[in-house]
Image 1 (spheres, rainbow, N blue to C red):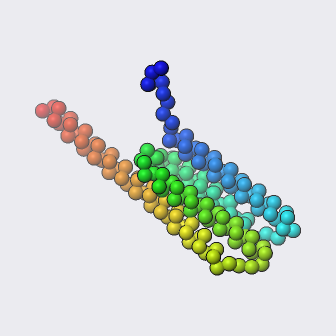
Image 2: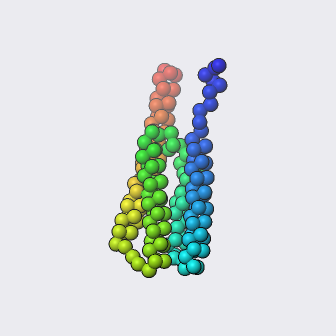
Length: 158
């Protein structure tokens, strides 16, 4: 067995899997809404009807854009901090929307729902700032590498 025969797992594969998971979660959210509406005697709530948008737009589309334009940030170790924060925020927003829909259908409200949405948006913001920080850091590293290569070339020529 040769070392060159070992395949390194591609970061694009991870992003594709994340996109597929978010698409499945969006389908599950649609199914939950339909099933809940069926057993709720046709009563619907806007928050529950549109909860699928968080995993669809925030998850699948968000990671599609990351995979297309910022795939290089996945090679950083600290990428996981932004990844976990972003995913947790989307989960909190989706669950908050689900609970808000249940409470609307029941004809009541809760002052604690705002916590789901506030913390969800904060976590999504932290994740996006982490992704942005990694993108900026990567650009600085690339510029530094180019300068170092130019310096090496001039040193070698002399």
